[in-house]
Length: 220
Ligand SMILES: *[C@@H]1O[C@H](CO)[C@@H](O)[C@H](O)[C@H]1NC(C)=O
Image (tube, rainbow, N blue to C red; front, side, top):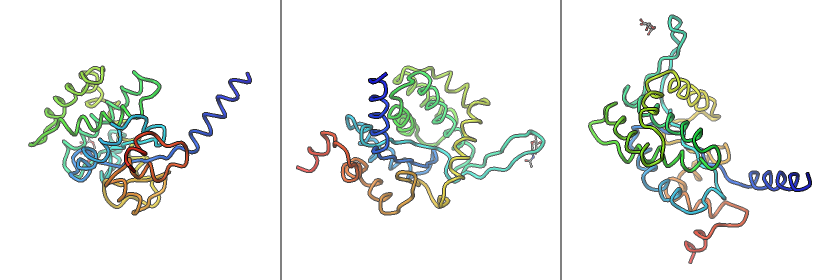
């Protein structure tokens, strides 16, 4: 009981001091890809980065949605066309499957999944290309590519996209562009620009607790 209480206190202390970075993206926005493939990749490749910062990627961004009374469902219009919506589903579905397969320590994996898809998709962008990317990434991450596709083409993908929509639309202030980055649930253009440039450095500069080794290697 005593140990449990202590563990709980420690967990609370740790989670309270940990930074959070939420990245609102779209699967085909060029500036999102640029960020995912550079600053964000370096961050998730940095050992123990999740001790300082909780990073999330939420693919939805500038999507418009209207409620269709006939179907009882939302219809999404993505900025870069319907293939972008499909790409969002693939990213969200993979994230969800990873969270189920690895119930703990899946934060970084979920980010790496979104990055993996961006890295594997190439022009001209099509749903088939996203399926191929999903298959290759699924093999890397030990999940089923067909499960990703089934989710992306079905109700589960729709529900995940709607959840991303609700989270994005609830942002205050509302997002004005993508990628839109909030730090500890607040938007700051200064922090956003620093993170776009170098997320690891931003985390090292802002984390108040015990810094990870990468921070000292960098400042030397
Ligand atoms: C609503 O969905 C139905 C059935 O798919 C479709 O025929 C109709 O065009 C949709 N309405 C709008 C406003 O898009």
